[in-house]
Length: 170
Image (cartoon, rainbow, N blue to C red; front, side):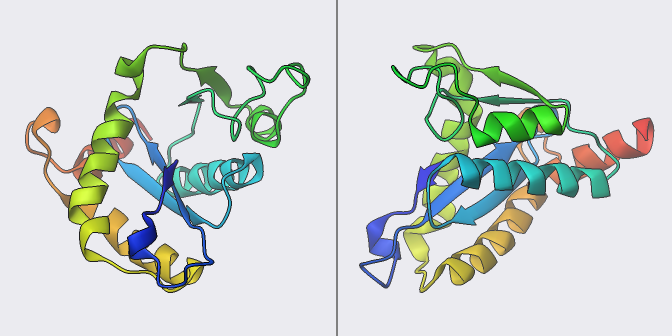
């Protein structure tokens, strides 16, 4: 989850958030725009991601998140054993929810690099007037990002890698 920089938002009363999902194998990204950072937004994105990959013939089996309150109550003193809406959604979809061990920043590496690229290629040159506007511009940015060749993928684009995977294994 990324807080959209204030300087990019035209309305000072508006808070916007970008959620990012990255496929471990292909580095294919799915981006979501939300007005709130909470477990309901996270669960909504999880549903959208599952539907997105299902259209490509891929079943989501596992999702790995940090320990933020938008995903888990693991570090909540009083609600530690209560399942969040995100966790309940993952369970209903039969998706294993794996939490990143605290104090292991190396596990967040792909997401952190992705956020830096988003800052450089997107947020430094865009302005948003509403949640709908952010969502539309993010969709275009997602399409460009998934079409851009990447060194870790031997200069293939995430879309190409994902496509070759689905053709091979569907």
